Amino acid sequence: MPQIERKYPGKSAQEIYQKVDEVMERLAKKMGLRYDKDPAARTGKVSKMGISGRYAASDGAVVVDLHFPILVPGSMKKQVQDDIERRLDGLFA
Image 1 (cartoon, rainbow, N blue to C red):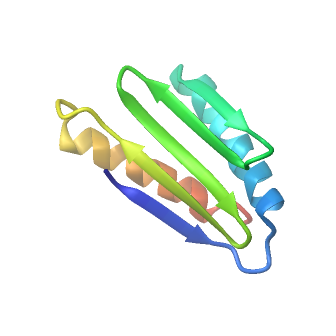
Image 2: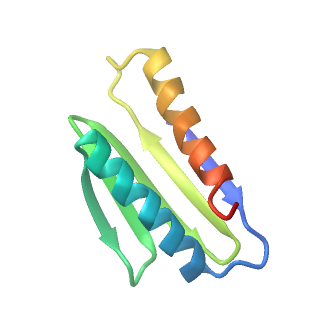
């Protein structure tokens, strides 16, 4: 299970959560994913057919954990991971 962490020095957990929430909301709609979020805990989860991703925002950082069923091809896993990393890299750009 891949884990992605990005650091945003000087950004509060709330600032990071708001940006990640916007990205996940768009991604969920675009890809037909279920999106559950907990603003108080600054966490969220997207899922569809055994594929899931969870994130947690904290002061200065966000961590995303991805889970794929064993039958998902490696190339698809890589594509999803690369897309998420690219979006996180541009979060405050």
